[in-house]
Amino acid sequence: MKKNKIIYYAATGLLTLLMLFSISMYFFKHDDMVIAFTNFGYPAYIIYPYAVVKLLGLIVLWAPGLKTLKEWAYSGFFFAFILAFFAHYMIGDGEQMAAVLAFILLITSYIFYKKLN
Image 1: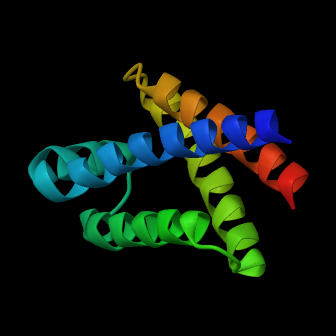
Image 2: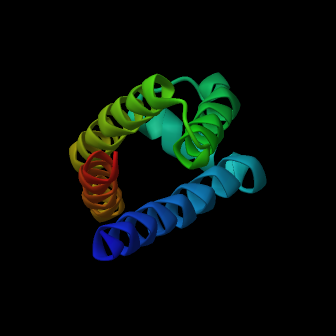
């Protein structure tokens, strides 16, 4: 049980750090993100709402209880990382490995969340 908790908190903590880095880029490097989102074919006006939704998802992952919301947060991140991988892959910018890492951390976090509950 202790090993499962350690793996869960390590994976969730690393995922949180990666997501906080991503969120900070949306807020503090907005001009660079506008260029990136435009290259993906996405409208630039979704950058701030997307950052807020990511932050809310992280809060839900760390909040005690909220089992249904956690499932929604995990599934939202799942689709976000899959779409991020393919968006980066399709434009060929070589940044898809961050999405792969986030996906692996997410799956690990989810599996051990389920084991603990």
